[in-house]
Image (cartoon, rainbow, N blue to C red; front, side, top):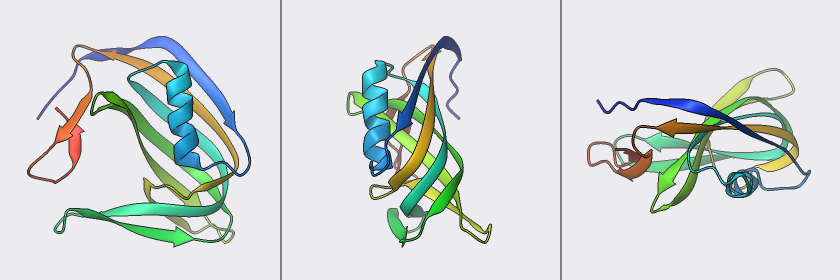
Length: 143
């Protein structure tokens, strides 16, 4: 187990994303504008269409599932850390359909914003939250 000691800095960056934006691209832009290198991401809102990933633990690859219908962002949370020397956004979403049923997974490109509000909290840790390849999982995880 790798553990990190840290705290929030008290610095918070908030943003409202525009209708029609790609959610992942705009979260990356928000993180870049904030100047933060590490943080916690929270978001709510709605999307016009969605694309979520599910990680196949045997094949070590993501499968993407797409929906072409409007959905509510029931919950969005993730992290900002460093991968290949650059800030990296990692977010999971829970989306609700018009009947209240929910789906969830890893945020992929192609999620189009209807409306979204984002809160980014800066985090300081005793060493950088840097993502490197993990041989056991095939994922890029904090080292």
